[in-house]
Image (cartoon, rainbow, N blue to C red; front, side, top):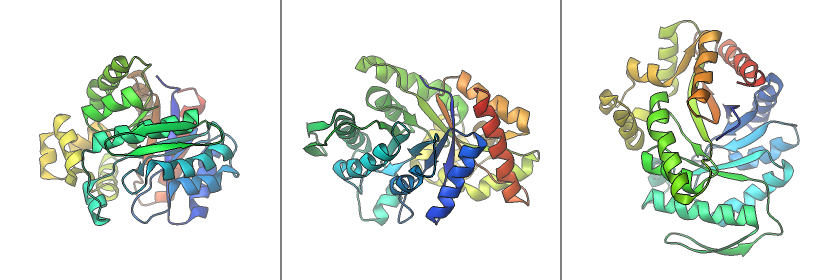
Length: 316
């Protein structure tokens, strides 16, 4: 189902800062860099095109590019560039985003799952075979490119149906703030069902999780609440957390129990064991969003990054 890859979420307001973070991750031995696109912030696909020539082996991934603002043919235009500049290293992760974000752009979100299915079919056909002839409910696309490119097309997933869709159609499912138990008991079985119904191998689950190598539990929890405050307030995520066994998510804030079920934290030994358990439970890749705890945030990031590199190079 996967290659036991360790990935790191990178970001920033300046391309040079993101490039530096990618170079730092590659030097540390981390195998992949992932970046989110949203609102008017830096475009992740363009940023990876700029970073391709300044890296050698690290993989790139978008986690995710919102679909509604861009026609899939526009996404293909951009993805081809990175696919050619970094052959075999670019993974295109897409997703519908959130209703508040889309409404701020004046965009409605009818049937996100059906919309995503159309989008996946068009992207995979055009990028991976070089041609598409598709008339769906939400998108139509009839075009070709000079030759296929080596780009895997993945999608965000949160509820059971979206994981099942990824199992049937995508090259991977990208989670976010899903507790480990939910990934094991809900996400992976749904992906297996979708793949079985489609008669194809199960694609990898990219488990996107907050991670913090830090010894003080209260400082980790405080930092997490500060740095990731919004998710229990968003309906999609709140429903997932409630269905994961945390009814207190209805209060729209993080409880200690919710964080303990989600965040991989502790000293180096405990975090390494937590990551290895996720792989043992079926994740194909761990995508880490570092939680920066304590008074020295740079030192906190360095400690977590060092551990991630060690786990990656040990073969996980």
